[in-house]
Structures are given as structure tokens and as C-alpha cells.
Image 1: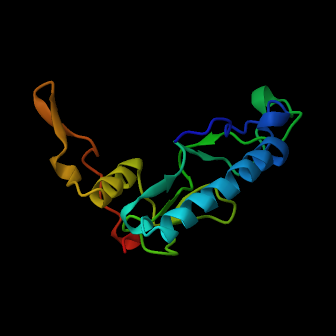
Image 2 (image 1 turned 90 degrees about the vertical axis):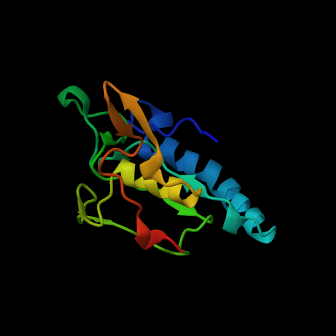
Length: 156
């Protein structure tokens, strides 16, 4: 499933952190909770992996483009610290992994890469991520690159 409208740069009210993002959270909070409860009640959560995340995090400070103060509160893309959650499908209940500094700018503990996240998801789906390779320009490439490792600390 995909839900558009989370790009909270603050260029207008719909992308402002205190307006648009707040409304997006309100729109999705109950449906996501209902999905998890429904899967659990039907005994399907243990066999269903639910992944919630984006392709990057957000800076912890106000975004100001071109040195100008924006009219709405927004935050820029941030590749060094991001938040996502997973539930069911072999994930340890209530587990939390990784930590940023006090302002949420830099990962300081339990840093993982997108390749680690992908390796973990593939592992939970029953695949050995190291076996997913393809030949390109005379050498094998792995989907999870050479650095991808399963994040064992979050597995049930």
C-alpha cells in the first residue's frame, strides 16, 4: 500500500509539519491500528509482516530554502537518520533498535543501512539475501550490496 502526501517541506499548508503532517497522521493512525488489530484477532499477524517507513528521514530543524524563512514549518530530506516500524511476521514485540543524538540529527547507536533493512525483510520472508545476485559487467552483484546484514536484534 502507498499513501501520498508525507513530503512535509512546509511549502504550503498541506506540507506544513504542524498542519498537513498532523492531518496525515490523523488520517492514517486509526486505519493502521485497525489493520494490526484485525490481523492479530484473525491469527494472521504472526505470519504477516507489516512495514511502515519511507525512503529517507527528516531533518530535525526548520527548513529554509534559498536562505529565506519559509511561511510554513517544514523539514528537509535527511538520509542519515530515519524512523520506520515493523510488526508481526517474526519481529520482536515492542523492540526498538537504534538511537539518534539528542536533536535527532545523527545516528549514534545501532545504525543500520537500507541494505540491512532489506536483508532483514528478505530473511523474514524466508529468503537468504546473500543468494539474490545478478551478473552485471562481469561480476555478481547482490541486491543487499556487500554490506547488507540481517538485523537480528529485532527478530522474535
